[in-house]
Every structure is written in C-alpha cells, then in structure tokens.
Length: 256
Image 1 (cartoon, one colour):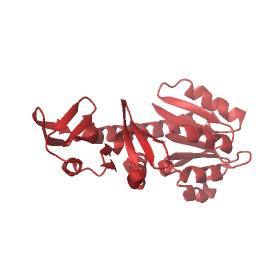
Image 2: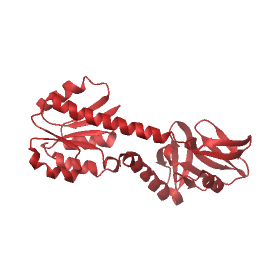
Image 3: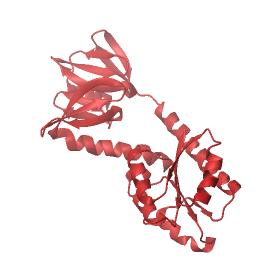
Image 4: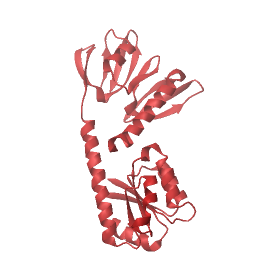
C-alpha cells in the first residue's frame, strides 16, 4: 500500500483527486488544506508521495517542500508540484528536487498518469528492498545444545548470563557456552549489532522505542517481543547515532 499526501485548498481540484483516488485500492490518500496542517500530518504518518499546491494560504508550497526536505526520511521522497505556471517558469522547482509537476487546469487523465507513474516507482523500490532484506548471514555458535547456525537477521539482543551469554532471536533463546558479550558482538560482526550496556548488546534494526527511566538509565523495547534491555548513558550517543543512520539508510539509501 502506498501513502499519498495531497495538499490543496481548491475545492474544484480536490474533487478531481477524490474522484480518481476513491476508485483505487492501491493507495491510502490523506488530504491537507494548508502547509501547517500538512506538517502536522507528516509528524505522525509516513508518506511515499506528495502532491503540493504552490498557492496555499499562509505557508506556500515552496516553503512546505523546503520543510519536508529538512526531514531526513524525506530527502528524496517524491514531490509533485501543482501549479498555474507555464513550463518555462519551472526552473525554480529544481531547488526542491521536484520530481514532476501538474499545470492547472489539469484533467483527470493528466493526474491519473502522473499518479500511476509514481505508484509503479514506489512498488519497484519496495520490491528491491524486500529482495535486499531476504539476504541472510548465518553465524555459527556453540550453544548448550551443540553447535548451531543462527540467522543474524533473527537476532534481537544478547545478554551476559553467569559466565555465558544468552542470545535472544525472533523464535528462540540460545545459551552460548564459554563466550563473553564482546565475543558475541565480534562473531556477529554487524555494524547494527552493538553494545548498549555492560550486560547487553542489541540489534538496532529490531528496536521499537527507547524510554527514559532516570537520568542515568533508559530501556529499549523491541518489535514483536516483550523483552526489555537496559541502555546506559555510556552507550546512549552511539546507539542513537547508529539508529539515526539506519533510519536514513532505510528511507533514503534505497532510493539513491
């Protein structure tokens, strides 16, 4: 499913959008009537394609585009300007890395062809990302039940346990024999699997959210898992830097 945000204050143009998009099963459509309303929606939702009217009340479409581009996850997202300008006046759009434009008045066919082009592009990029995600790295560990090959993509976190380590994955927990936490980190050898506490190391790709407990301690929760691990101040900046890097890679790197 592709999410599209249309920012438009013209009732006539909105009627064209709604006539087409209400007939489509492939998109979730959201409307905003001003730049300020659009920014509030962007703060709480993830969009794939933006149609921005230039002549908005208050904040115009150019300023809105500038603010969208300031968000790391939207550096290369698809922005299509809707304008009354003729083609020879559109050089200014390059400043905002505009992918295309619609000139008013536009027909249903004009809009539909633009939309379809970008729906197909988003679908191709989604398929490319899925293909990249299924690449696996198998790591051999000595566990209490013998040697075991574990898919590194399934690892959530590791923790010290007496003189051993426990390795938590999406499906199982393995007791690793005679290894330190540093040994586990070195063996997994992945830039996104790093220490977050003297007793824990986490796969940043599995983090759901981080909650502050007090001035010295935070806790990490994971997607589809009810376990919680500690994040100490010593490792906080490193974790957040890597988490931000991962977010930018997911949202931008696949489009470059």
